[in-house]
Length: 153
Image 1 (cartoon, rainbow, N blue to C red):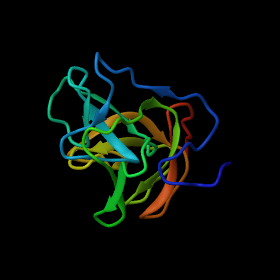
Image 2 (spheres, helix red, strand yellow; image 1 turned 90 degrees about the horizontal axis):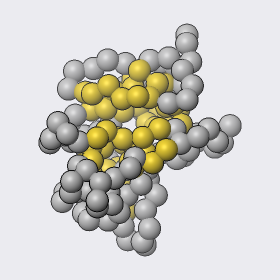
Image 3 (cartoon, rainbow, N blue to C red; image 1 turned 180 degrees about the horizontal axis):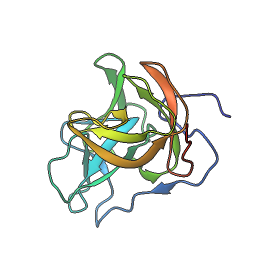
Image 4 (spheres, helix red, strand yellow; image 1 turned 180 degrees about the vertical axis):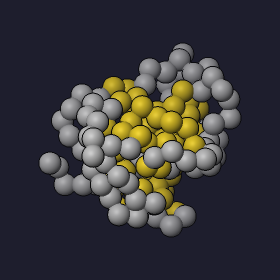
């Protein structure tokens, strides 16, 4: 297993990029938190950590972008991409993510409708993703989420 780095690949299993519409995906007008889930608009190409349109697609915002000053750190250590900067928007794969409330292997992963943060197990104000929790994590800890492996407890 690779060294855990929040937001990065957790295995060498296959992953897939979400196909955009006529315009490549980029951070929305308010910027975009990385290592979280986002909702992308296929018509405008904007990705935000909150859903504003039922036609938006849900995917994972990978924390790698090009450009030296594209990512800034603020708000308790969260990393944000500046508005308009291109992002890698992933629809499947295995990633290390931080669960503020902890995580239990085998649970489905939900995306907070408030800020895109991952939630282990069913939650209000959250949308079910295609990911499952693959490893346990204490509150505030890192766990692997996966679309390729569903661990049962």
